[in-house]
Length: 257
Image (cartoon, rainbow, N blue to C red; front, side):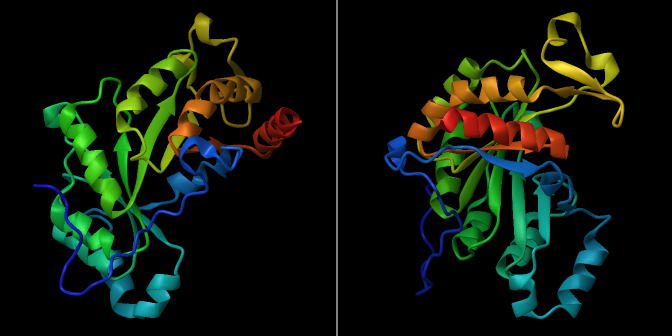
């Protein structure tokens, strides 16, 4: 059943706010840098956190909830049911709904009740994982979610394994139904490093991880920039150190001329 806008006189408010026009006619430089902590600090919605969330809802006024910058994330299929998350969304809480169904081998289908709640809210998003060969149900699910709220594609990247051209091909069937692609070039542990990856990473003593060179990340970004910008997909990349952020900003400034 196709998603329908809510009835009963309720005006739909969309949560997505794009900086891009389709085909990027405004020539917006499509890269947003964000600290990795913005993702890592989200509060997981599960049985362990439920009592704290209940207490927060009980002790916080509706206006304070709406003005709060707390961000939550719920994994579809967890022990808590969707009704709990729907309640959170209706109360104005900023919830990212991560759609997944590993039993089917592709991303989960977001129930219409969840999409109805999002369509009445201006916060939160539905997050889909990247699929190398998008399933028909996945493509339809992204389209339906985009009618209701903001849609994000989570795209972890290991260099050079995840090729920009394959990412572009995977996103092409989603066309203009994605608001943001979070392309995170992730650090690697020592046991994940191989000789063919060493030119893209350096060993960071402060974290005991192999961190990607800023130039490697930027070169990868440049190859997806124009196609994704044409589809109106914002590109967000994460940094884990101030030095990494500054290096990326310098590369962007140089590229802008």
